[in-house]
Image (tube, rainbow over all chains, first blue to last red; front, side, top):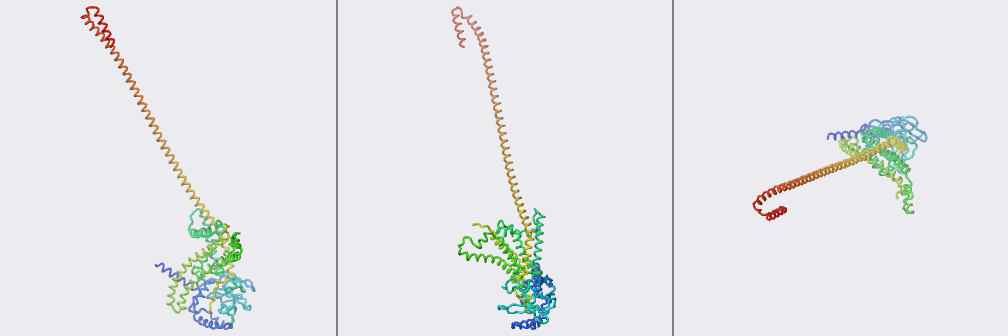
Length: 432
Length: 170
């Protein structure tokens, strides 16, 4: 019983810490918050606004007013150019490319990382807005390192009638519009190709490197153990990892790939352990909760690699099944072939979306459960509500975290087993 | 203030896409060649070793069983041999006893026969002696009788003749 209480207490403390990343100094912010909220209210009715208006309160270092759980969740799951652990923000290398200015490589500390991952300086027309690098569109903006008055966000209407939040940099009383880095969503989700590309070692990239190195070190260590302890029973880390390794080998690779299992095993093992490692890494509290496998770019990269591996290894039998399904009447092929070709792409697409959606959802649910404390606390006004919600939220979060642990394994396993089945289908020999 | 409330994770960042690909492929290639393949090799080798050991144990067990069967066979043969030898010995013994008995019987028979012969001979000798004695006795008796009865020669002769005939018949 005492142990359970201790765990609850720890998790409670931990919840606070995770949350603290964005919400320390909460009380001191309230005064400004009210102001900002009013200002924001004004802007909402206007479609065009004067730059002076926008930046009227920018120097007051705007902070949040009403607590917005959705925004908090979005902020927490997104990638960033700083690595925030509790109250500390570690700068990360920025590698930026714009068509006009070429490559710029510098540490994100150049932005002067302030509260909330907001930089108070602009460097080479780049600014740091909530941990994410943005570029000022106006070419007249000074190129060097300049102090800015702040960044404000405005909802503006896009030409196609949708609303979009744009960040404006306030500098010398003027608002300068910024733009987001280029994304590969082809404008589907409000992104697209802009004037610059961000190849930075972001929080997610740093997490991936860290996880890859840790896993690599672990596996090389284990492999060496196998050589050293040849003919002996496995011990320690070796005996911990071996069942998982053998599980992927015997339950995933062998049944789907038949006698070709050994050729594809490193790929499947790499996929499984890479995804699992990242899933679990994102679950570790106090380590920034990187949402790596919950980022579409990462899952897309994995899906694309899978797609390429599957189709490169596809044999004549596989291609014949796609373009000329044997035993199907010719006229039907006009329907079958397009369906098969679409299926070829849908397979990796579902892999990508499944992993992304599961992990993102997990992260968001946990953050939203923790947000309950702030919702019930009414931004610090209702301490009783906050306390009550804290107890409930701790229990809910504990429950969610256990489920997320399971999900971390299941999703890594599902991604791997489906990849194995696609590979199996692509390399299967004709049997009729 | 409006948060930057955009669902940015759904917009695949090109840089992140690039780095994910690079890091994953590096992980795959490096860890695959440095760890996964050696581990698979080691596991396969161990599996083979275990299989071999099991096979060996099975073979050893079979050999043991064979050996045991052989031993039993040997034991059985030995037992058979023993009983055969015993039987033969008994037979020989029996035969010897029987022979001895036969011999003894023969000897006995021979002794008996000899004894009978001797008895017969003695009896004959005794008879002869008795006859001789009887003859003498008879002659003496006859002399006495004759001295008394035989006054004429004719009667004498007839009488003697009848006497002699009588003796011969005996």
